[in-house]
Length: 238
Image 1 (cartoon, helix red, strand yellow):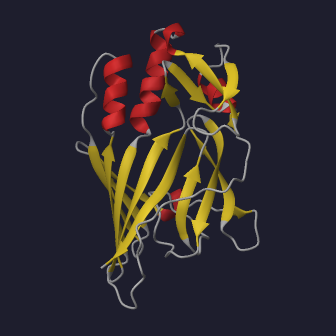
Image 2 (spheres, helix red, strand yellow; image 1 turned 180 degrees about the horizontal axis):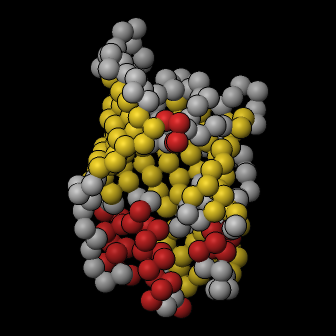
Image 3 (cartoon, helix red, strand yellow; image 1 turned 30 degrees about the horizontal axis):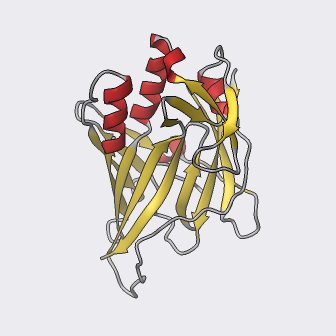
């Protein structure tokens, strides 16, 4: 079975949070995550980590260059003009399914979180117009994580389904002493995948996207996979 791994590079990252003082009493925690594809499109080129390019485009030969967004990194790139129809479909699908704004609300009394997913943004609209010949359809859905029932309810516009914690919980393998950085491994349709997770000690462990962990003492600050990245961008209290 195909295995998907990526090199763990620990870098200093600056995550900008809304300036919030944690009150002594509150009943609700609101938070926002941004999910982005790890493909970067700039000047008619597709940039990405070489492992991502190998995974998605194993038959295409890519060139290496300094990352346009981080000059300390060497990554690969492909010219979009050389993509055939199938190559474009792969890129289109990745961008469409990994671009979300996720607004979460955890209610302490109910011990339940509601996550509202909004797919796409203005930048993605422009990319679809330029490279894929049109717009994408607006799409929203929500996920309810019930910690009492230990169930995750996913509600799409036309279909709903429920999964138990037992089937979805991920265990973090910590790589530092304060348990703020680690990896977790799971199997999906693409094979065995390992992601990197960073926890933030300032935040409650219920602050997380729809990925639930069995052993996180703190909120999730970032999750990085070979395909995409989740970043916590704000936390507020009511």
